[in-house]
Amino acid sequence: MLVAAFTTVAAAGKLLVAGFPPASPVADHLRGLGFQVDLFTGGVAAIQAAQGNYAAALIHLPIPEWSPEELLEELQRNNSILPVVFLGDGADPSSDVAAAVRMVKLGAFQYLPASSSPRRIGDAILSAAAHRAACTVSPEPIVERWRQFLVGDSTPMQHVVETVRLIGNRRCTVLITGETGTGKEMAARAIHMASNRYSLPLVAVNCSALPENLLEAELFGHVKGAFTGAFQSRIGRFEQAHRGTLFLDEIGDMPMELQAKLLRVLQEREFQRLGSSETIKVDTRVIAASNVDLVERVRQGRFREDLYYRINVVPIQMPPLRDRRSDVPALARHFVEKICRQEDILLKQMTPETLQRLCRHSWPGNVRELENAVEKAVALSGERRQQLYPGDFHLPSHLENRSAAASNTPHVAVPDEGLDFEHIVGTLELSLLEQALRKTGGNKKLAADLLGLKRTTFAAKLKSLESSAALVASHR
Image (cartoon, rainbow, N blue to C red; front, side):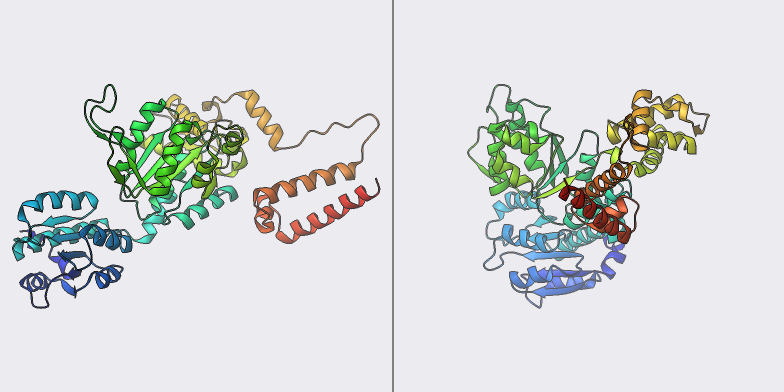
């Protein structure tokens, strides 16, 4: 039954097989199942070949000069989705169970005793190949999956998206900053989904939600009796995120003593559970987030400078919603679809007037405030009405009016004695151009896009205004 179920998998599959002689009943059996068997005698050759498109790997221990743990780590480094089946060396049959538990915990697909028959080995390989086929996702859907966490096409969001695209498959630590509600956790999820760790856990910890003693146990785990109330051993979040991603939210609120322990884990990739002297090694990517200025916290002596530089390898600034108002319609529609799907009701639509009103609001609570406003509007509109009107969104009028005033026309009072119109307008224009340059890191093309100008127009205006300002200064 198993052979029949996986015939199509085997027919198109190649196997990476190491540790068997050229003439082997196991290799012959696997060929009989329809696999193309590529035999390798040494560990180095097998590791290099793992970069190819193999359905599964079968490793017969021992492999000279390689421990099973080292070999597995290198195979997975070269191909993170390759399922690896180990066949024991038969030296100590009584230790096969312990070896199987250890290797499967490290990421092996299966560990079989040396006495396993060719048929049993073939069944294990068929299962591994089927698992590999089920987990295989083409590059385009993967990109589409992580991109759904970052809604919007404004220039600030394009910067975020491009950064995620560049660092997704890297191991580097990321620091995401931004105001409350800007979507820092969504950015962390996007990074995780864009990485080769996407099939493994993303574990989130809010560093401000727990007191220091509980936070340490939460991160690193503890053994039985480590402290009052520790009635049994428990693994921590770092172990849960092994080979996956750990998201440390509000890291600026982490106690100083715990910051020192976190720094050591990031540097050494190892730690000890509370109450234990055993050193545990982990392969965990860390993404940190903060809505406070960590540089200021360092100046105040409330955050370790060395830890700041260790987590700030790749910084991502999540823009506030007021700086990307063009994304409001897309975000609003996204939340309407999400909420209607969750409530199992017909999809509601928003009128153009509704979207205009949403774009005028200042959104001090950022994306989270917009989502809450949409959820409330959907609930209050009832199930029968399919249109969402401006009156369904009960936004504070003073905030909306302040937003409209700020986003449309700046108020400049004309004094009784008059003013220098050209100077005032020129100063305002120069200020806008310089702000755009700061936001885009000096990139004139992106700054021009941010202001809706052609690059040539932007450059000409900047040169003219800077010359005028210098001339005025020289005559003072």
